[in-house]
Length: 235
Image (cartoon, rainbow, N blue to C red):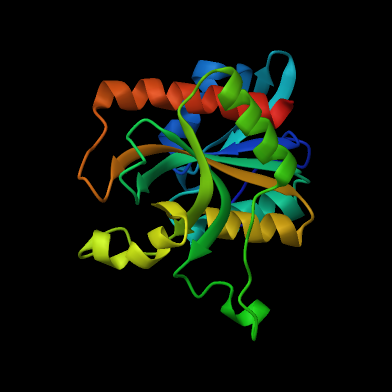
């Protein structure tokens, strides 16, 4: 047990999906997993373990933002022995080539957070995804003919940004495809604990065009993303 998790050692599988929303964690467990059992309910940040096609897998909500994500990821890695973590979330596209419902596979994660400043000073650390997980995700997307993009993410501490097109323009010019709020901390901690991590994000809106996904499309897109994440996690 930890201050944020009531699960016992052995309650989590080695592979864990990480949505931000606790209710999305519940939905994933009830929709996709067999014999799902709730293993954590502290602060209502729900965690579950079950099986998918006979293979053990867990899902744990992280909350929003890097500080919250870092707490749950650190404890999963240090206390519960998790080895593969796949973020399943949404992101905002930063170029007009990124359309709603597309999937972005984050090869790297820039950030405006100061979370890595102290441990890495005087260097600027570049958090990156695990190559094998990323390669598996690309192969899956190609086989399923899913519209996907591989490139940089930026994990921002700020959700509401004035003039996003201007604010993110330099990042977009350097190949950053989308903005979200968790991947940089996830990739950093996975590297620290010699584990494997990948962020798979569905584009919910494009900050450059104002296009947003509808509720029906959002649900079907989430189904596709979770099926991809489960396939990649257990391959």
